[in-house]
Length: 463
Image: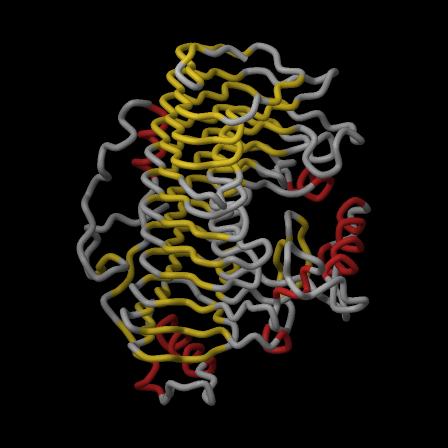
């Protein structure tokens, strides 16, 4: 259970006392407010170690991983506290958090993660695009820990670039790298996915030739997680990726990464998650809710549930608030509100993507009071994502509501593609205005859609 911020001898992660009860920002819905009341950031003992006091030196020629590890272990033995990275440019390998540790990046500090893959070994238990394996350590990682945080007003620099990490993607957009015959993720990815389908034990999913880029921040099977205040740049892969965690807060985080698969925040198979006051300027989805891929996701069989999104800003990205595509475990109880999106590089606003290999039961998804300035496709529900309709696990949508959406400029208002045998159902659309839409919507195999007060280009509209 999350601890009360009023507990004796502790302070909040940022160093200030925390309000006893959260702001009543989800009071419009009883269930959403109950989730909000349960989500409480971890608190930490009023104890700290600054890494420079242990001999850490700034500058590219110094790897401070040993001093960070020493500070974490020293504080953990004492019951926890704050590991401080002070102002300056510091360079490190992976950081593994322990229970009751807050990694605090002070304002003016930049913690660079050295982009040398061998530093991110030995392999750890991780998940890559929804399939579990023994893979490169995430840049910041915690496994089966309680009360962990990454906070502060400093910057985390992931080292992703056209020369490091990102080329493993293979051919991507207009990048000047191509499909390398060896150093290419597809060769590892395809074998891993087959292992997932064949139910190979995770301990045996190990690759000598591994070109699967690590995520930036990945707490795995953790309870009471906080990521707050930091700016995250140039991630090798997904930026904030809690997996199988409970009681997660991601607040006031600025995600700025334009490499391949630079998703901003991807909670996977988590329970009770709050994402608020964040800015996403990314090379892929801004927020994507996930729960495992195909057979491996069904083996783990854990939905992503009780997710709150509040007051976030989405700039560039493939999608603003997204469900999928690795969604085989399902998702339930999403409440997203008061988000702003706008960019000529924003492909989609509200997006649900799956197919008949992924499947997934998606229920009680609620979006309200969104404002979109410029977007290509505003509302997307796509059952044909990637593989199309070649599987036996039909997606199921139930109780999807979009209320009070205002779009200034869109290429298309709706792109909704269900299957002839499994149409899109359970959707309610109301109080939606599109000021300017360039092209007709794409609507295929859609049934049981409730519509109220939809206007496109100044005129009443029905799907």
